[in-house]
Image: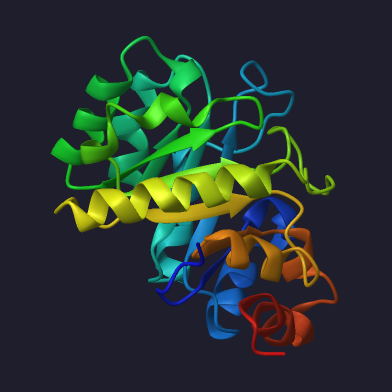
Length: 227
């Protein structure tokens, strides 16, 4: 079932020029991005090391778009408050990253932030069954997390479609709206397929930042369906 809400594009700053990160965030915001996606990796839960809350805090003055922070760290709970204080608007975590998913989501919401659950390619969708009322976003990883530039995993299209059915049923029963986000291998070819399966938020790093600042608007429009 296809989603009906407007498609949002969330460029991942993992693919930006880190020497000019503030300028890059400002440039994609001006080019039509809806959210800024921040990949936080600890070199333990995933095989890479990226940024901490200090960078998020520094970037806040460069952009007023929602900061969509994906925590690929374990244990995760001790970092929820630092990222909330730094300016994250949405904080997403993996069920495997801590012992008490429900409690972690409660913590995020108690700080006035939106909460998300991230499903790795092999994580079953029933991981969210008993926390649907606690989430504002479900993020489907269409690559294995840890680094950018990977190819889209085709099997995740069925997972996106199944989650769209569950989200629609949840909302129809009186539940809160839940965004369905996809991250990994998103480009001009895979974006329309993810949208058709039911996604309404697309994370794109390489495909957004390819070609330099003059190309960002066209890149974003193409993935949204405007080109």
